[in-house]
Structure formats: structure tokens, C-alpha cells
Image 1 (tube, helix red, strand yellow):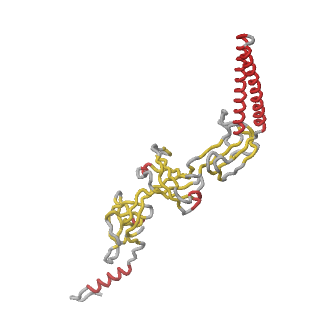
Image 2 (cartoon, helix red, strand yellow; image 1 turned 180 degrees about the vertical axis):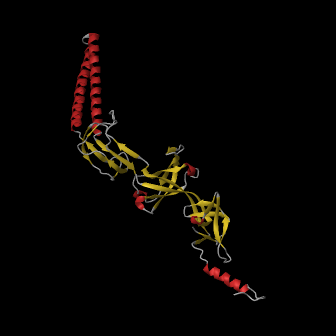
Image 3 (tube, one colour; image 1 turned 45 degrees about the vertical axis):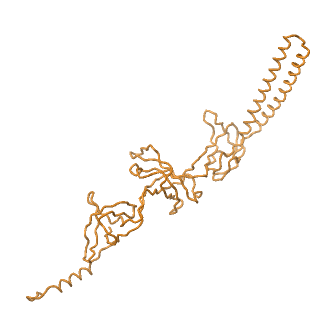
Length: 342
């Protein structure tokens, strides 16, 4: 209906504006707020023991007894595997008897040389003969003793004991298996592997673009598939000085020492990620990452009009830390302003 001349259109315009505001649906929005945000660098790898030992026999033989199974905790010096010792024990007893026999010969040789010296019988030639016989008897004792010591040492090798406090990772052999010594051409038969339980670490890889942010001593959170959302505390202990080229991407090895009180729950070879905290801002202005829009290198957000006018204004912003879910806004936005999510 047309307005009469001189009639003010103000009320009609206000009615239309209010109707537009009422009809406006901004969709999902979020409010810029102040809070803590962390910059995270992820190292992906596996949980490894600080020390791992591969045990091989020092003597050849047949496995007679295995005292442990995979996963057993052991103490240093605890017997793990027995190799048949009957033949070695018999040879050691024979060598011990040979030592006693050589000592008897040495005793008689000493008596003869002493008697010859006292009587001066037979002249110088006889004295030299007796002296040579005595020296040979001494050499015979030394050879017999060395033979016995060798066999006694080999006999001690028939019991393979734990070299440290730790956990059995994998028992490779079975009772009745024939084994070769570590001195053989093949390097010896692997009996079992064990790991020290003093300290566990996560050995992971970090992309070359992120490694510049990582430093020794930075805190980290270790997560494994086995424990779901549970994390274990740790710290960066070592950074490899030399990168590795894998599928045209350079990675650097990083070791994360697991310092958590419950670190014993983790097992070697578990796969996991370490979230290394490389930067923290306690009072950062943040918005959801899904609010960001991009135009080339330009980053902007759509800000809801503060006066209630329907719609959004485009605002260029500068961002800082991005943690995947949130992003720090360094400039272009104020606390309390509402941004559109996409």
C-alpha cells in the first residue's frame, strides 16, 4: 500500500529491520576466549628399554633346562638356562686328577734335586739332569692346572644367568635344542633377549620442519594404543644430530625418557606417540581452528556484528600457536567477539 505524502516511513523500516534480525540464523558460532594453549610436536615410534641384552652361550651343547618364560621379571645372577654339563664335569674331574698327579711328580723331582745337592753325587751333569726334571715337573703342573681351570670355567658357562635386573622379552630356544658358542663363525645361537626395567623410553621420529622447535628437557606426554586415552609423562632426553631420509622426507630420531610413576605398565615394542610440549601460552586469545578461512596467504574470520545487525563482517587476523582444535589469535580479534564456524 502506497504511503500518503508527508507520512514518515520510519516505523515500517524499523519493523522490517526487526523482522530481519528475528529471521537471521547465524549458524554455528564460537566466542573468542582467553585460556591456555600448547604448541605440540608429535614423535611417532615405539617404547624401548634403555638396555636390551641378547644372550648367547659361551659353550656348545644341548639345552637341558629353561627356567624362565616370556615376560618374567628376573634379578641379576638368576639362572635362566642350563646346558648339559655331564661331559664337561667328567673332563673337569679328570683334569683335576691330572693336577694332583703332576704335583706328585713335582714333589719327587724336588726330593731328587735336594738329595743330589746334599750328596754332590754324580757331578755337575747329574745336578743339571735333576734340575731339568724338576722344571719339567713344574711345567707339567702348570699345564694340568691350566687345563683344569679351562674346563672349570667352561663348566660354569653351562648355566646362563641374567646379567642385569630386567624382564625376559623372548625365549628363542627350547629344551633339547643344540646350541653353538658365541665364538663360532655364526656368532652363536641366540638363546633369549631381555631388557632392563630401570628406564623405558619412546624412540620416535620427528619431521625436519618441526625438529627445530624440539629441545632436550622439554616435557612430553606418551600415548599408546594399548592404554587408549591414558597418557604417561616423559621428557626429551636425546635428539639425533643426523637425519634419516625416508620416502623423500627427512626425519630426526628423538628419544623420550618415560618418567611416569606407572611406566612399568608399558611393555617394550609397544607403538605410541609422544606429544612434545614445545611452547605454552597461559593467557592466549583462542578460537576454534574451524573458524579460520584462507585466501592465498591471507587468514581471516567472519565476525558476528556486535550491534545485533544480521550478518558477519570479514576480519583479517594473525595467528600464533595451533594445537589442532584451537588456534591462538595474536591480532585482529578481541575477547568476547563471536566468529562463524565452518
